[in-house]
Image 1 (spheres, helix red, strand yellow):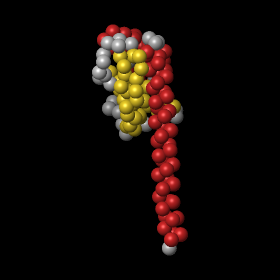
Image 2: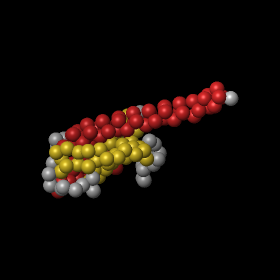
Image 3: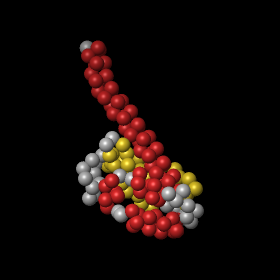
Image 4: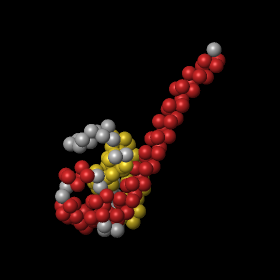
Length: 138
């Protein structure tokens, strides 16, 4: 009976542990993708950030409009001199977007011209790789 209990417990815990490990890896990968993408924004490489974004985002926002939006945003916030990850959350869906895997990330940025703000970045899984599909400053 004791062996059966241990076996049942292992059958329950091993998948949970593997799922937890996959989620932790997904969080880490998402943060790395975001940090690299945000570094492009921080150095003013808006065109490069646009090209690194998910095709779905590029279909929704033309490149010229993206450049205008980013220039206006930075004019209001000033440059970011660092940020801290606050939250990573899997998203089951995204309004107006195709079905898929999404990851929402929140950062607390240190903007020179906007002391209290939150950056929202949404990633979409594209061929097994995370790509930025949304960015917003609140």
